Length: 386
Image 1 (spheres, rainbow, N blue to C red):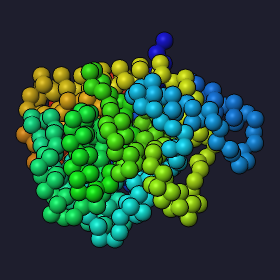
Image 2: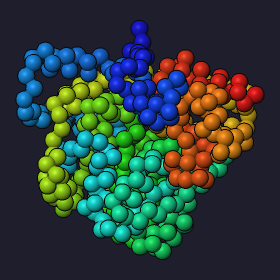
Image 3: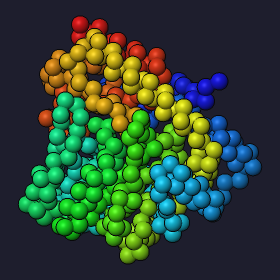
Image 4: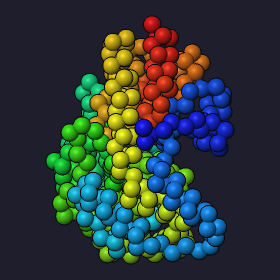
């Protein structure tokens, strides 16, 4: 029997399905946008939460050592990375975390660089905090993306960049960066005194022979880096609001502690800790099946487009459960929203959200849903374009 079960999330106050009117002005769209899953969480998570709810008292919660041990063991077993308990801090989400770090590691007006196209809250965190956004476009070679290290360093020097927000694996293009790529990036940052936020929330979602390398495991970069991750993408626990911040350097931890202490946000809610501990401890079999389900959805989508619409360019899915799809041969940037929403009744994240008009001919498609939904979305695009 399958461990991974699709659930209909409509009318459950689900942002992805019940937020369509607010986002797109209509509620009859097939939701393929927000980066969360339509899969029920592992049974071990449900059981752990049910046990907690049954005891019926929800007062102040003391985070148990077993929570830290569960995360530490997961990182060691999945990624070969030895995390120390004293390095671990809490944030309600990785977005909150990089907003905070931008504030306490830079000054107003400082330049912060990202590699575009990229998860749009990166750019929002820079602009919202009164910092200067610097973008370095990834190099697109027939849908496979790489880093222009020369341009990256040039922009750092020209703009006196103070901070770099890295997405690893990269959302939306699906790249899993190699050790050499990461080392080159970090050596450039070291050379020019650029601090690094490494957002690794998708780090468990890698496929085939690709291997995620935690940024803190690449070399001796502890004094210039904070790593962010969470069980939310891996196990569909975003509503539990429990992210893991890894800070090996004592002085940087002290900065984090002062900043979050002044916010009075140093611990999460009990439900988040209990869910995360259960998932990291007993959710591995579910996790492996979930990855197979996602990659099978990707293969169907990719192969159908190759056969039916050969000029659609689908980026290779090395990591994440998000497909980056180049529709520029068939649709102009001005046609995209009307075609997808009005003709196909589909809701996607549009390319321009990830770095401006130059990416407007792309869509990002969430593959962490049922095969039926993926087939329906792909066939609507095929039929309407043909």
